[in-house]
Length: 252
Image 1 (spheres, one colour):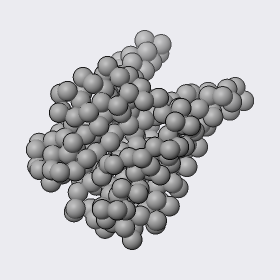
Image 2 (image 1 turned 60 degrees about the vertical axis):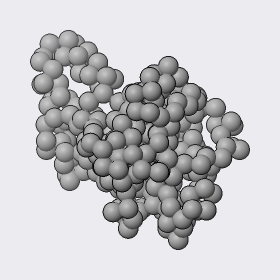
Image 3 (image 1 turned 90 degrees about the vertical axis):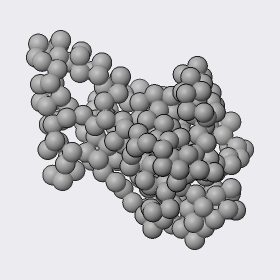
Image 4 (image 1 turned 30 degrees about the vertical axis):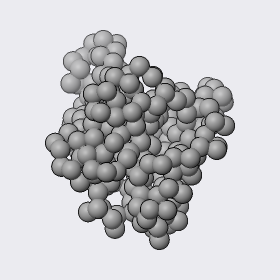
């Protein structure tokens, strides 16, 4: 976290998947800038623990229940669509229900939250929407059909939101990290090291970061720092953009 700056004092923010990983780092970053943050997560206990830490509010919500979001009204100045999951499987073996659920969580839910937030943002002439996409929003990898499809779709949603929101002072952008150091990734690294009989650093360099020029994982706080900047007045002319943070992966 960049430390208290106060440039978001008086603003409200909502971060989905906000109880851990990138979401938690974003919640801390925005709170550090003075925003009143709602931590939305399916894990209500973890959301409350973080909300208590940062002086925010917890919202226990299952974003797969998209029907419950259709009539939602959000009075938030900043929306960070971060919640997501991953499944690795060949297309021929990919469970169709899992594919649908992943698109519901990472495309339909962000659409419904944007839809719920825009009226308030339009009314006050200010809004910041940041969609946590991925390098897979602009590149593909085998065996990740649902995730790659969802992130590509999120890019399109973000750009349409930017075009519609522009005249109302609302910006919409994507942040596209490669592999970020989260508990989920750390466990994958340990498992791969055991399976292949190689050091964990070799797993990072040889397997996860083959395409990256910088051979290290991204820290959640690095992603959050970019998200924080995108919410400020300084980024008022930045909209419809895709900000890669991938160590050079997409430069290839």
